Each structure stands twice: as structure tokens, then as C-alpha cells.
Image (tube, rainbow, N blue to C red; front, side):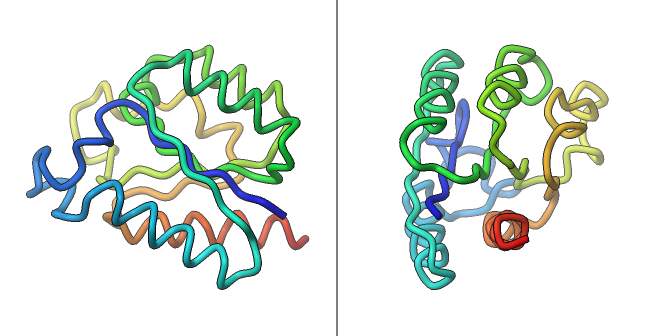
Length: 145
């Protein structure tokens, strides 16, 4: 069962952008660990990042037909603004886990609302980049059930 890791806007700046908040690991570090951990769990994984909402939506649509069984997504700032991203995830009807590196609930009030959380299989916040591993394990448990 293949899994897909999606990262939204500005996550290509991991390791550079606000390291006191997001840490020093790069997106490549996160993706490499994700692929390795997924393989150890018996799941091939693909990774995709874009700063463009439409590209993320296109990749979600492609997941419906490319053998993807579940998605881990860090939508970045689109978390708080994108009904279209929510609709794409609902449209493909694949289980997904929402992940945020920082604790969005302890940050600015506009970050407290997510358009995805209420339809996600699970939500992981505030664990740093280790949250990607937690999200993957939650998704794999869902896929196994």
C-alpha cells in the first residue's frame, strides 16, 4: 500500500526558515526519513512539495489513480485558507493525516483553525519534524485496519 507525503507552501525552506520554530532539518532530510520509515513499515512512499495550491490539488487528484492508499499532508499556510484543498482530499476519498511541525494552537489566533482537521484521519501538531514519523505510523495503522 503506497503512501504519499505532501508538503505545502514554504516547507521547501525547512532548515532555513525560523529554525527556532521549525528546527534545522531540511525538507530533503524529512522526506528521506519518511521514505525510509515507510519502507520499514512495508509501504512504498512518494513525496511532493509545492508552493502552489493548484499543484498540490493536482497531485492529490493523481493519487486517486496511481495506487496511493493514504496521504500525510503538511498543508502549511493553506491549512487556514484552502477550502479547495479540503475538497480535493474529500474528493479522492483517501485517508489522510494532517501534520504541523509547530503547535499551531499555541501560535497566532488565525492559525488555530484548520479546514482539514475535522475530516482528517488524525492530526499531529507540535512534535517538530518527528511528527512526520508519528503521522506515518497513524496512517499505516489506519491502512492496516
